[in-house]
Amino acid sequence: MSELGEKERATSGPARAVVLRGTGGVWVVRTTEGETHDAALRGRLKQETAVKLAVGDEVMLAPDRQSTQWTIEEILPRRSVLSRRAPGGRHGERVVAANIDQVLVVFAAAQPEPHRRMIDRFLVIAESSGLTGRLVLNKVDLVDPTAVRESFQDYERAGYPVHLTSIRTGAGLVALRDVLAGRTTAVAGPSGVGKSSLLNALYPGLNLRVGAISSSVNKGRHTTVGAWAHPLPDGGFVVDTPGLREVGLWGLPTGALDQCFPEFRAYLGHCRFADCTHVVEPGCAVRSAITQGMVSAERYASYVKLREEN
Ligand code: GDP
Ligand code: ZN
Image 1 (cartoon, helix red, strand yellow):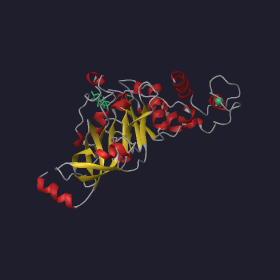
Image 2: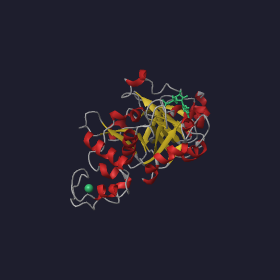
Image 3: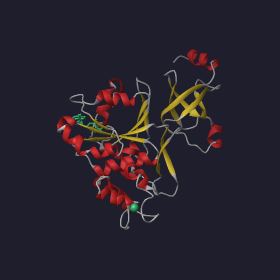
Image 4: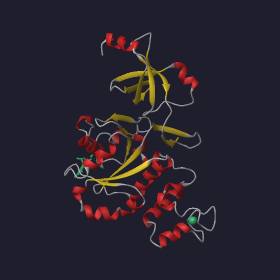
């Protein structure tokens, strides 16, 4: 960008932009016109607002009069917040990304084997932020897709779309690209399941390093490495959230864990005891739904496990 170009824009007034990433006070933002700039938060805004700027935030930019830099003048109201409790609890939530529309929970159908407790943990995190979850089972070229579809039926019954994908055969890629278009999607899942490979297959321009993002070398830095939003050619963004990958770092909601299992909701409020934990109490509507095969015993097992962790 030439200096003249910057000055021309200075006369055209403030621009709207989305925060792609940032560390140490410098934020990379992308304007509605598709230009990427470095920008700093206006000094006074830091004091005026309780809101801490996050990846995914929509902001208003203005050219800084003193330099060719851009300044973030205003943080626009958020549609949603994906957050986790700060390590150690106590100090409230930490915003990982703002304005997320959905959470893509990516696992492999094999190599590594999908871990149901971990899948459920990710879905609970999405639910507790009020976000839609989607389950991706990648590497279906290594397994019998029909068997996988069947063994993950309880997720579809709970209302979660399940995508079976493979970068080897191309299975499921078109449908996945369709649901990412125009939305802001946080991508979560353990290392080695093919998250980078999938995104590269969907959007060749993205050039994510396969096997690199979640390598063990990076593990120690995961608490400090922030989210990273990648603009998509179809509109929308995929947000790589290292914090979401390190699932152990995520706090679960303190109350209402049962509300984070959508298939339980129809039964909540129907237990004999108003404060039923659905674990030992007699007259529990949730457990009776499981006995009757209305709710998956596997999903319930995750609920019990996550409750114990809390
Ligand atoms: P990430 O850590 O989740 O980002 O996973 P990567 O994208 O780095 O992929 C991990 C490994 O799985 C790599 O060796 C990929 O080549 C392989 N992989 C990714 N997708 C598939 C797939 O659909 N089928 C098979 N067979 N292997 C895959
Ligand atoms: Zn109950």
